[in-house]
Length: 559
RNA sequence: CGGGGUGUGGCGCAGUUGGCUAGCGCGCUUGGUUUGGGACCAAGAGGCCCUGGGUUCGAGUCCCAGCACCCCGACCA
Image (cartoon, rainbow, N blue to C red; front, side):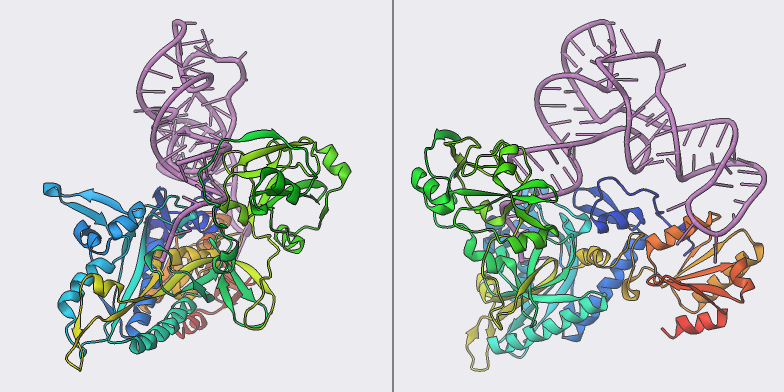
């Protein structure tokens, strides 16, 4: 492909609102374009990456017996009523009306249409197992789309579903799917971790998530330093979620007289509430300034964790520090305070906190997060004994993005659609199912998140839009002729080449090459020809070297 | 759905207490000079200033309502 003819060029400046690395580089590099929040269109460069990732997934799914099909996006609402999911996941469903007032949903997942197929196809134990899959757009009315292509309202997903005669056969396949999943991510150049997770709204059963470490991730993973134990923090933290009675209606904020001792117990006694209903505010001195930390009254701030999270040395604020900031020990609260506050996640689950009013012997009742006070950031700061259940090793926290997940579905759907097969013994039975998802468009963004530098993307060879970025520098006629010739030869050899044939300045062309991030950069210029060939540099390397055209062809074709 | 922020040529931005023909950089077109890390000169094209109401002699600017987008949360196979 000649870059001069490519539909979609790089931009010198990224859109101001594209702030996660994937959003920034993919839009600036001309891979994708945002049409609306969470809705992207793919330009030739982005589309090529998408297709490569799809191909890897197809190969790995086929290898474990998957059979690709294609199911429709537009689904009659009736099949969604059959599982009750038109109500249970109503909040994410896009609905639309067809001719004659028929109601449709845009599929957010595809268990339902598949079950209609299964009713017809699954009859005998001789047929099983089956593992149909498809790669298709999904539509989910996310409350908040974000982070470029990582969380979209329209996105592409590979979903596979398996049917088995019994649990044993299912388990065997489930294990195979884990291997296939690791293969997919590895081939995309990603290091994935498999972690235990809760099933969420789509399943109540056991599930495993596949996650990749990224800054723009949405989840936190706990990773054991000693063994391979990895777990979603959600599970570990379940214990600090909402104590009984914590989730109540928000009541009006009230300021009251509170002649009491300056501690949590005194506050809880005065307000006649359990200690977890008291909002604890602790003030630290960080980098010369003061920082408030809110946490549930019954928990303690783990200062080591706080330091790790802030990457700063901290110490407790002194009485003078507090006085200067206008804070009264024992009656501190984020409401009306003049210093920044952060918080432990535990306070998100409790309504109507009691807390100080930043005045001696005055308290607030019914203080609510968001309405009455805000915090800058939520961190995991509670002093909980979070150690590895296997060997007691320390657990580190990692920001991760979920790129795939696998579920045991049991007979939930086969029963709902009354899909039965006749077993060897002549009895009718429900097949047991699993489902296996990979976010395909999310993978595109994840690769960028995991592999970039300040200049741009660094595509792994396996998913790069082109293998070679060929460019000329200078306006030397001979160099251009040589480059044209090389471009044609490489094409003849079946090498995917992006040829920057523009008459642009050196800096612009080199910067564009770094931004687009094709693995191998090949420069043909007067200078390189004088040194006897072409200059090659891997995107991952700093230094380039000059080799002959013959050597180049050997180098590329052996790959 | 709560909190915060932003809407001005394709992209990034400026626009004063309301004032005349809405600017700048990048990009684009034409001509010329350049060419190893975002070159230069000259001449151009390109704007429902988010939308709708209001105030005013006069609104990009003030007021009201709405919409969109981004961020932090709630939510989330």
